[in-house]
Amino acid sequence: MDPRASDELSEAHRAPDRPRSDDTARPGGDPPAGSTSRPEGCSLTDHAAAGRVHSVEEYRDHVLTLVAPLAAEQVALDALATGTPARRVLAHDVRSLLDVPRFDASAMDGYAVRSADLATASAASPVTLRVVGDIAAAPTATVPTPGPPAGQSPTPPTGAPLTDAPSPATPADAPPTTRPTHAPGEATRIMTGAPVPDWCDAVVPVERTSTRRFTPGAPLDPTIQVDAPSRANIRRRAEDVAIGDLVAAAGAPTTARLVSAAASAGHATLPVHRVPRVAVLSTGSELVPVGTAPGPGQIPDSNSLLLAACVRDAGGVPVRVGAVPDTAEALRAVLDDVAPHVDLIVTSGGVSAGAFDVVKEVLSGTQDAALPPAQGPSEVLLVAVGMQPGKPQAAARWRGTPMLGLPGNPVSAYVSFRAFVRPAVRRLAGHPDPAEPLVERIAEEGWRSPAGRQQFLPVRFVGDDGVAPVGPGAHHVSALTRADAIAVVPPEVEAVGPGDTVRVMVIA
Image (cartoon, rainbow, N blue to C red; front, side):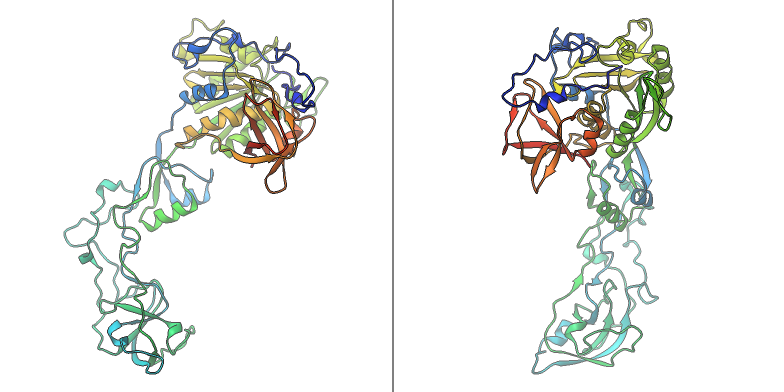
């Protein structure tokens, strides 16, 4: 498997004026670029000349060709609001099944009036109105729940396909009311959200009347005085959303706002892409389960936990396999077992040039040449990517399931996950733009970056918008605990100076 030593990250902390050594592969370290296999249909094979190092963008594009958005499923709004992952992705457009508001409603606590009755109101000559009724926001026997407009089918069941939804309502479709017509000079107390009577064309806020405020449990004032004309203060039926209007487009995340809007629009479920199930495993005979005292030459299996948490944060469901010994038979057995049950397999270790790099051995196909793709590896790509850390990478399908092999160094594995696996998980989950978002910060200190490689350096935040390297040992797992972000330095930049603008991936 890959050694746990530095993947050349420590080179970043040499003084800028110190000469750099050649970026040649070390024993047990990065593989030679010529180790790339040339499977049929691979998007990189046109460029896989011996000795070529592939760019981060090229390899990411290839990884994304291995995955596609998962099928849709109907999920209850309650589950979307309270379950995990926190956000799913809409698989189809969602249109409203209801008018919002469903009826003309009061926008204020106050009194329903006729605006004509207040035409002459002034501070010197207020108008007195007789209060003859009360309308609460809750449904009452005198204000029935509106039914479907005449000539239209009933509103479809919540969550039903919108092809069955009624056509948009017209102004003539206003909900009926059985409240009697009031005489001129009369008013009715009304609460926010309550349906306004047919005769009402304005609501006077209580603060602008002689009542000033409503007291719970207090009787109605028999009369009120109003000293100025009032605006309508009425929310008209469908002024927010009409039946058939677009609530959210396919690809939208199920945020709290979207879940609320869907409920208001009459939905009880939403069509969302299935959550990706991602198997994560570490390779290495030296790895022992977490909580087990390591013996001589042994270390805890931290990478499978790291990657499982990363899968969860990316919106997937991690299936943590744990550590697998450095034998081809053991790895094949595990891959055969998990492949039918997950949407993506992620391994760490075993993809470099060591004598026991089992992932590379198993994917090379030398012992599986007689197996059809459905029974072993296919579309295998073992490449050198122009990045630091994380140069050795592997991509394939195992029994048809996409598989990504990452280096074994924890920082290399984390950086590789952010660069390649996270976009793949997001693509599976249905995100239309799976790319990793970057933000700009200002370098507070300078550092070196390897020529021709895209550098991913753990950095800490300084002040409002600054960043600085976490210090020596950036290749150690403790660097991730000290880091607030990963600085992404383009391959053409050999040195970052104080005051330079740097793009970073924020570590949540």
